[in-house]
Length: 299
Image (cartoon, rainbow, N blue to C red; front, side, top):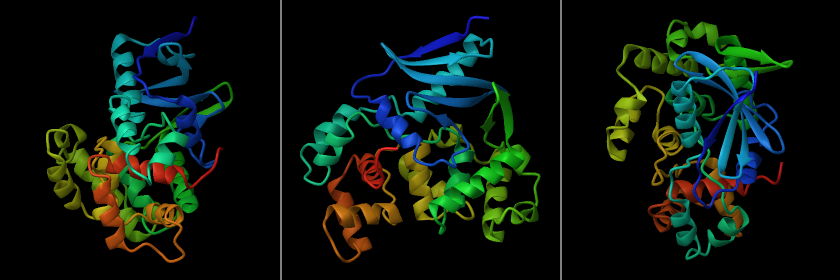
């Protein structure tokens, strides 16, 4: 069987290598497998698991399905996911023009030119990951996510490699907090994640619904969820809704990056971070993402 290929158009600026560098930042990542020139992803398209290899092509990104016959509906679902995952519909040229006028951002946009804001197209995954990462180290957050995915997610093995799809909310909604406690989730986080899953399963929370809201309305609705505070809501707007104005001002990594780039010995205060954020107006999310990127080297 000849593998099916899907070509996805991409406007400049776009540097797939920069995106792969971000995707390779943790060896503990369970949701994709990133190599030197490709990323493998198990797509959940209307309940069907499709394995795709994404590479740079001459006219954009090329998704190859080595083990599946895919329909036009499958291709539409995969393309939608990839476009959101890599933020392909964003006017990044506009961000680069803006960054060239900003002393703090200018060196970053020149060093990481073409990097897109890599996100989480799936709302449940975005919320669960944000809750998992609250007030713990990033490495432990990856450990918890792997345990969660490998216990409650779905998988496919192809050529000896196991690929995973994130747990579905309807499956997590049936759990009790004690089910997550033995994986070292705190009781609160277990309750939060299960509560979010139950809202999504009941139909009172969905990405489709939230997409009809303004950014301010999305923020208010997310803050109504138990376990979702200001940082989590900002993070989810940034990473799931491609909201370029979202600004997680309390984020520890953002504070660390600003301290470094401002050559400060003392911590940057939250008031200072918010003031700096005002200078990013219109591009707060991209400024934050590029500052995060500066915290790690080439991997």
